Amino acid sequence: MSDLRKMDTTEGTNYSNYSVVDDENTKKILVIGKGRFGSACAQGLKDAYIEVGTDASLVQSNVSLVSATRFMSSDLSSMIEEIADCEFVVYCGTQLPNHSSKLARAMREAKKMSEGEATMEFIDFSNPDPVYEKHDVSGAIDMHLALTKKGDSSSTVMGNGNEENWSASDSSVDDWKVWKITEVGSLDVAGTEGTSRGIVYGAGVSDGEVPRVKMPGLHWVSAPSEKSDLFSEAHLRIMERAEMDRWWDGNVMGLAVFCFTAFYAITRYSVDANGSEPNGNIPMYLLDKAFAWTGLWMMAVSPFAGNVLALGALYNRFSSLPFLDKFVTLFSTILMIIPTIFFSISWVLWGIFRNYWFSPTSRGSKNPLYQTQFNLVGTRDGIEGSQDRLHSMLVDMVTLKGETGNVGFMYALIHSFLGFIVCDVAYKGYWFEPNGRLGWRFELSMTTGAISTTFLFCVALRSLFGHASWIKLKPIYAYMSPLGMWFAVVHVMAFGAKGWNTLFNKNYHNGQMSITFVSSMFPACIFLTHHFMGLFGTKKRVSDKTLWKNSFIHMGTQDFKAVCNRATVKTLEEESRPSCIKLI
Image (tube, rainbow, N blue to C red; front, side):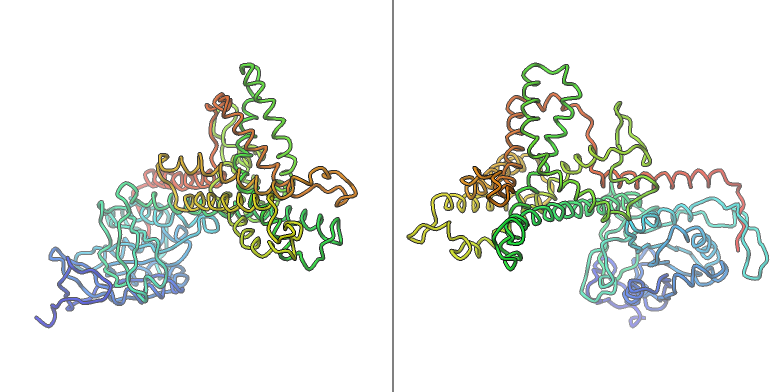
């Protein structure tokens, strides 16, 4: 007996509370899914142990691996035979909601016919994309509902072709444990790289409880107790994808702005257009101007949209505003004309690019990117409600402040590196005095550029670190960020303000306006408007406006509501069904 009970030394698994291993018997684990992840999972489970009994003893696993397609297409009697005596059914396939009813029926009957004390549990390792595989997100939820339902009124056929009835009392409706494991990859479950964390969600389980199977490559970590259920996992998955789509949207906007700025820079300076620079200088010298310009505009997009939204709200109640606020509103409108005109082409390009990039998110005949979230009286519209492209795009610009700011800094940082190369007499001879040193304007430009880069680098890092208390964030976003942007504006103006007297001179670049003027007026007018309205407190007059969500967050919220609604409908349907069941 001493040979059969020994200390386990499997590397990567903490067995401090489960030190006794019983090799007399094995417990069966069925892995459904023969893909890359399913095969890796089966590999890891072959070295796993299962906690059994009240004495915390461990029994070695006996793993069977089956193809999800073959298994789910087989008749119910074959499925029951395969599942019989399983301690765990592990799902690594796709389209679990489509198979949940049939699989649950097979598990319930297999558990009823199993020998001894049946403790069958279900583990879902599937990892559906909330956009491309959005109907699979509720797989574990559907599985738990199917396992715990009271009966099924539909008729089914046995493998011999005979229809057979089963009463509800014959089928197991005991509490089932359904687990959902996230944040693991194929190498993690296979245990090829040491120990990794697997975040555990569950239904029918206790707070802090984790699966009894001990995989050498995984350390189970229960999700926070208030967010450890299957619905919380679905919500987290959907919202994490929405956050990633926000980053994609910020990058798409950056590409749209860069396309405009690059086209403008090339047409103004290329020898084949309105300039004198050879086309061989396009890859670095001319595109460097586009990188700098894009970075400057991207970091000002959010306050631009905020100003436009504030002015729109002020005009909706213009007649009730005090005289001073009316004056501030009118003057701010004049200031915002130039930024709006300059940004219009980039805005249109952004709309075109994002429509193409996010076309897989389309639902029905309405584009959810531009969904109206509240009507004039503040009532939420459904996902197929009216569209408001202008307002939703402005809201997205404001709520993407972290993403657009970081994308803008990326372009600005590229410009900083290229600037070291361009700052040479071969490229910028007029920058230098006869003694070989920079003139005062260009020294001012370089200094303010360096200060701006340093300040904005701190802002970008803080944004990448994520959320924190406002006490910590205020010095960064309320002071350092505006200062960094103003230094960037001075950096650009110091280069070219001297030549602005030729802005519309047709003998100078055929009348195409200076890049330093067009690029700097956008943020300068935006920040002047922001400070001007803030000085007189005009924006506070519309602080009671209902806030819209970012389009992707709104879409994610609607998707999660759909998951909850489907679960509610299924629960109601099960409660209304007659208490008899017919099985294959």
